[in-house]
Length: 263
Length: 373
Image (cartoon, rainbow over all chains, first blue to last red; front, side, top):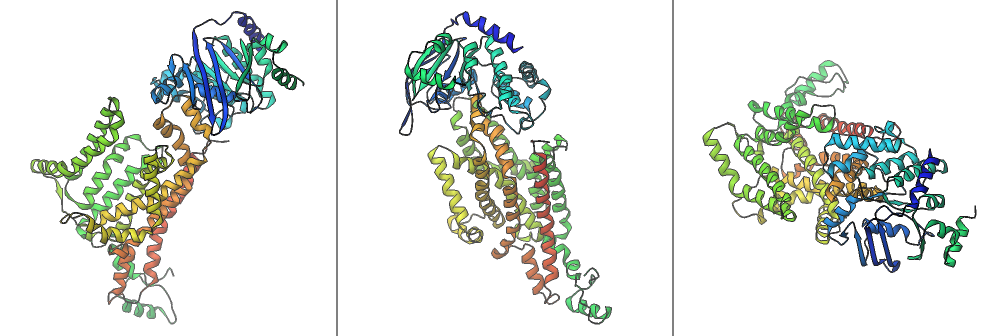
């Protein structure tokens, strides 16, 4: 199953994603107190693009994607998502968040609601969908992540991999135009990583715009259009995966790749 | 103990009966409870109207049931919203149109709030609604009630607050305080966590001031000091003042208990709900508060029980709660010298109520348990 989907992803990748830009970040700077965490970030993402962001811990990669749906506030520069500029205007922030789904390292499912309720909550309250419609959409997404039979359980009764798949389905239920993944497999046991990656590969096949912070280099090779390497708050290098892995330009990238690809 | 004296009109008669049972008997004289039963429960409430508080209590039981138990029919929620006004009318009497007019003001307030929140002035919806309700209460409440009363007079005999007493008084103050302190406490806790500086500072100030001063001081403030600040001639019911003070006092404690629950939630829950596009109030109502309140259940019920028992402090400002009545009973020539029978009875009444609250909280915790079941 996953073999097939991986192949299709590879085939897909050759078609360059050539939509209009959906995320534009210009000269963005961010500080945590005195600490300059993101420095002069420039990034443009076009519709349908699948970007993997990697780098050592503390390099600012998570902070970067958290700025895209304003879970973190940037202090300088400009971020425009789907034509909406992110400022302190709450209306704009809510508009952007409706179009941008996010999957977290620790799932962040709502433990007091069932899996189905987790998925229908935002469509009902934010998109004002009727309950029945939201539930049928949710069931179809739960089928896509292959856990429709767990719909009436609580998150606490599921395994980590299942929880992360629910989290993906929950984000998809809002029918976002962009999906952000913040180290989606880092908190999982090794044998559960694959089931989550499989779901993400299938999602990539649908043409979803994806920004993924991950250390899964296999995933980057097969799925990404572009790999971005960050260190100390800067984008050091970005390239197509083939070029990135086989022919890294900077010494810092070479060092990083040699360290993580050793085993 | 079980075979105490149950039928006697005074302590002397009780002692005689006790000797007739046998030498060296040391049985209790429960007759005092038998003889003063109504007084201990209702104070000086007119006996011909005893059905009113009883009926109000039953009504309250039905009204609160859908809130406490999910298995109860949802139609009862109608009672939940109407019973405060009905109970007020039953207890104090006078024309029914006063409480109806008050209910009407809240209804109008809610409608107004909804209209404004949808319009461009949505930021001002809370202050405008607040001002409207205050204006209604100041200028329209009584005239509207009087007009309606002229039209269709429905009323019960008016019973002033000073005739209220006994366990009924403790229940009225306790239940009102419990019901009102929870929402106020939630708002204070959210306010204390707010990033809006003014709201934050007001809430911190309120909580620290109220919590830092003993309840008995606030009760004296309510009974003595408040009169100096109110415009002369205003007749602001003492019992109402006490209820307000007890409520505010419990709210401050409640706020801190709930803040503990809010702080215990992982930050990921906030991020999860905002990443889905839920706004502040939606995220609080649907995600944060259900979990924070669940964590705080033991603390919340602790505060409820504390509040309920603290109602006995009103004896110091001259209200005739069960303790106040027991003092009065022991001061009569008939029952001078009786002590622990009364206090056991009062203790038992409070214990039954507090223990039920405790059991209910344990039931609720089990019901809300969602992991590994």
